[in-house]
Length: 439
Image (tube, rainbow, N blue to C red; front, side, top):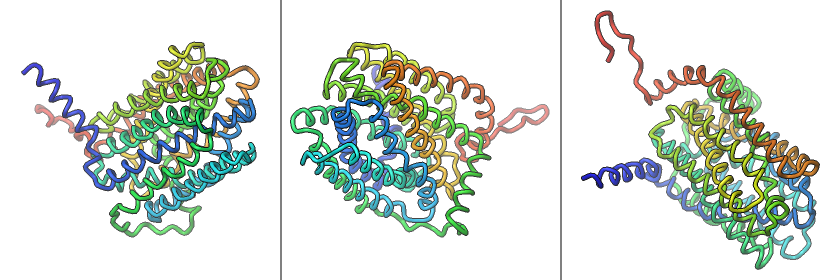
């Protein structure tokens, strides 16, 4: 009997984590994404290594990161308006097809030896424009695939787990492929991997969307979404925190090739190990969020995750040994994913359905929009001060963001309480009658 209790608790917890897989569309999506995301991470690792091999410049690593994310500033908000009006599945079929063409083009250039840095920057801009439409649409479509809002935390966290599971496998495989056949092979394999997600999207059965509120223009729809965020304090606070993390925290990752080759004295396989360690930590963070029964209390989990991330980045910046750097990156990945999965779940739980696409586009813009400037700034700092100092600055800045968020935490929890009541996630408080008790 004593042994059966932990086992039963473990089974129940596993069911809680996997409950989004009850939905057919989400199962199809998961199967396609596992294949496609592995290819995406292979390309990302190969791209960073190719740029640094061709240029020996941390600044140009930051420039490519800027180019891949800058289109989000111009396009992502518009994409959110369209996601509220058009079929999300059809939009994803288009964006995934274009991403496949981009991977095939960069692969062909790399394998023929014709590729130059300007090709990489131009194709990064193209992919950034595609992702500006793909990412908010993907977030909005997630609710349609899961169907039941009670299963939404599981769906969001499982999506993050798939993303980071691919991030765990892809870099390791990419390091081996780059060493054996060069970066171009990774790009072409990524192009092939999109077949899985395209097939999954085509196989889905998605009911037609109901009539949506008519807006005079795309600009008016965008204005309405921005105003909604500004007057909804918890969503506004989360978006500001994510923007700060993207600007001063996450860009340390663009320096991974520098750490792998120059700080740790390794090669492409070392680069893959570092990214894989961060991915393993991210999976742990996503599983934790998936194991929670609801979004209630996530606003208090967010600063804990961000604090762990900041301290881990500081530790990584001081390390000169692979065996120490990998645990630091594991903790950084765990903290980072705890923040992102918690924030995403919180926003998706309380947002008005009619504005979901616009709000999720602003959520995605909060890190995709700040990310380019963070990558460029971090690359410039690394060029001038060295990669370890630049990474240490990222960690210290995130500790400051934790402090600012904690100052607002009591008021945010108070503002979230009636929203949780409305979603029937917590019981409504009832004032006790004189001489009696509450229900």
